Length: 163
Ligand SMILES: CC(C)(COP(=O)(O)OP(=O)(O)OC[C@H]1O[C@@H](n2cnc3c(N)ncnc32)[C@H](O)[C@@H]1OP(=O)(O)O)[C@@H](O)C(=O)NCCC(=O)NCCS
Image 1 (cartoon, protein in one colour):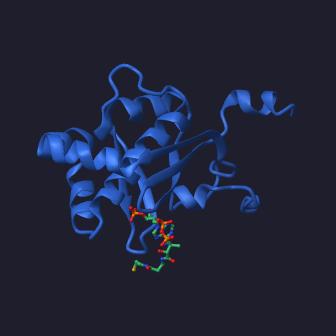
Image 2 (cartoon, helix red, strand yellow):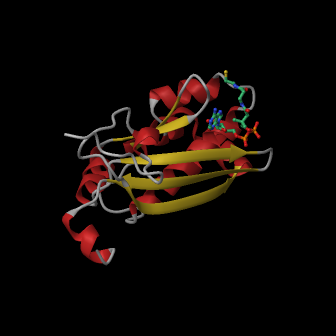
């Protein structure tokens, strides 16, 4: 049997390391963006310290940000990333969702990846979302993030695409 032809628009290889039959055409299922003032995140860290960090960020996220010279920028970027993922998911702050259900991990290159847990994982699975693409940017005043939810085509996709 011939190998499936990888369509130019597939984003599988950006989300998963696998490519093969059944993963021919991941579809975009959502888009989300957020912007946050870095001073606001800095104030929350200064006011609430460890309690705030532990409620919002995973241990790996805290370790990444605290290693950086301008740590508030990186914490703010991750805050924006979590909000952007919730927008891409489409539910926003639905019941049962916790900040730490969304984790940003950084590859050696610096490129951010998203892990989801708990309620966000469950809601993503029910929405046919297999992963999220993420981009973060920050300057001295603001941090911003954009997330794209991607998933495999479901039974209804061919009909809705008019096929
Ligand atoms: C990626 C790059 C274009 C970022 O641009 P910038 O204007 O300096 O910084 P921005 O504020 O816009 O973006 C910073 C964010 O870019 C993201 N980023 C960093 N490297 C990235 C990469 N290779 N691919 C995609 N995103 C990347 C990160 O999420 C980072 O924020 P974080 O550290 O809080 O996670 C630039 O840093 C670059 O070319 N880096 C490659 C060389 C390098 O410095 N590598 C260091 C790792 S060895």
